[in-house]
Image 1 (cartoon, rainbow, N blue to C red):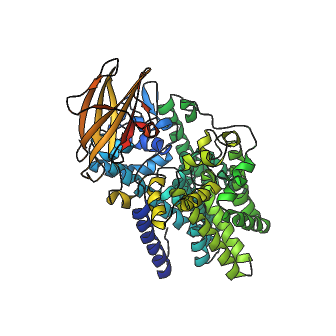
Image 2 (cartoon, rainbow, N blue to C red):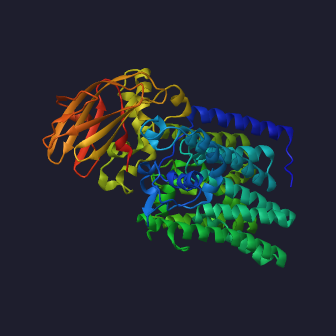
Image 3 (cartoon, one colour):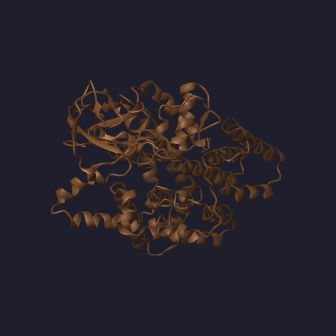
Length: 575
């Protein structure tokens, strides 16, 4: 099997690789958040312990939320295993560079994992996103589109459905890996269909198995084309070999379920009380809502759907292979309880359809006579998605919903996730109008960042020192002072407020050396007279508007904020 590439193709993809590396440095986020911790956990646990699942609580457990749960004295995830397989070479390498603990190292204290692990996840996302674009390009070229149309259609849709965001800003999510697997499947499947070489069907089946292991719902994309092959092909050897490949992936999937949940047929969501399906009518919201509706956040998809429909009218094969699978997936997510996709950019559940949407763009462009006007229109739609992605990055999305609407009109649960496309633009219009200068607006953007600091900002030390508090016993606490990621020399005056049962007191902790990791014990009486041998505690009246309490025990809630510098009170991140 050979991939013959011209000099222009090689040059184009080398330039694309360079561009992705540059964007990765400027905007790539080496942190794992939310659901991504589930995929991370399986690989990390297997690499660190030599097996999965482990009965030993991982150091990052408090940071994982619902993505890692304790069940039957084991720490498991409700999510599938496909993405984890692709993580292994990257996280195995990062293990060699891991250092510190959640009490001493900035990265582990801030988000539970090492900088090396975060870089491994980011590198993996960029690598498979790049391969996904290549396979999407090859898929379109295999269908007869020109090199230019194939290349630019692939890029336009990669940007248009915000796969850029899931490559650089939320690299731990599964969507880049779905895009890679599905693009590779389509390329080899179409190649088999045109050339009738069985090896291409076998390779396509391997990528199909990987896709299902990444997200089982995507199996609906594979049913129509495989049924067509079963109907058309009469070779027993072909069917037997394909069935064996499917069986291997099926056994692996059932074995993973058995090891994780002690039942091969158990759905992972049952481990944390989630119910994936909700038998309602959500298709209007899924496609047209300002709250992550596909055609509102990604208007270029509207053009793509027209192109696919035109192609399906011309070819029944296109109907079976492309349009019907896309409609099947939309129907499935119509019944998905969390149809908006939680905290996400655009309609993330449908990003896997990017290669089909790219096909629609390519066909639409070929059918329209007014090429220059079409190019301009498509460029405008791509720029729209680019600007929206930038605004999303610079907007505290979980706060904006409360600014622009009453909770009773929210479409999501929790209501904080009902941030809308128009909210992003309104937030920045308000920010600009409230600032007297451009520099004032730009300074405010630092506090508006969504999704963690990029590699560039980390290199520049644009982070805050951390404070973490653990309860040792009732009314005795251990406070950890952790410097920012470049160990910047900071003398911090901290305001510490303790709420114990019905009592409340605040203390000034002055001159804390945030240049190196240190810790201190605080012991309090039941009347909240507190003392420490390592730091001075001066009773004061705190600014209640700055207090943000986090529970550290059943009886105690504590707030910490900086009087003269910003600090990140790590306990607020824990679920």
